[in-house]
Image 1: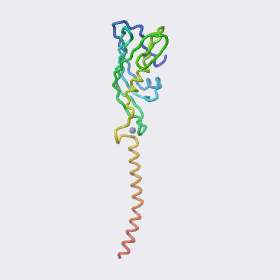
Image 2: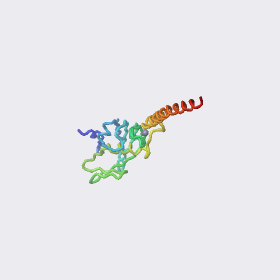
Image 3: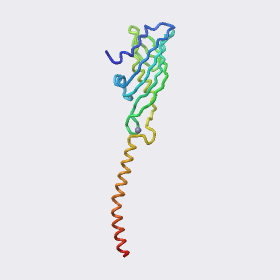
Image 4: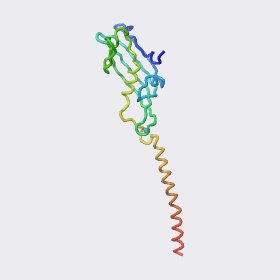
Length: 173
Ligand SMILES: [Zn+2]
């Protein structure tokens, strides 16, 4: 069985006037299975309520948790909090289509797999520029190394000054 099969929602099983609720908790293995490029780790609670309206099915997602993405500055992982409410609509048609707001689900199948939608909702929550707070990047320690190198440089110069001082001292005698 495919890891993502549990994210299938059988729209034909949803009756008019009823709200059907789904809950998933997704972890790193979900992101591995979805194979998105931006998010590879995370922990999210996903609540989905599905209603059948006259013109379409309404899928209301509430997604909360944390995902890890690479910091733009130091390329180490950083956590991004996720708290998103997104409404997606679905209708039946001849073949699968997804324009971002309306998903067309093949009439004869009647099933929508929301795994990719869960991923996309989380991915859209990530700010375009995402960096650690100042001083918390992994290369902050590189700054530390740089300072150490400067200190070493000073230590190299010090003996010369000591030599010069000796000469000056001798001249003053
Ligand atoms: Zn960073």
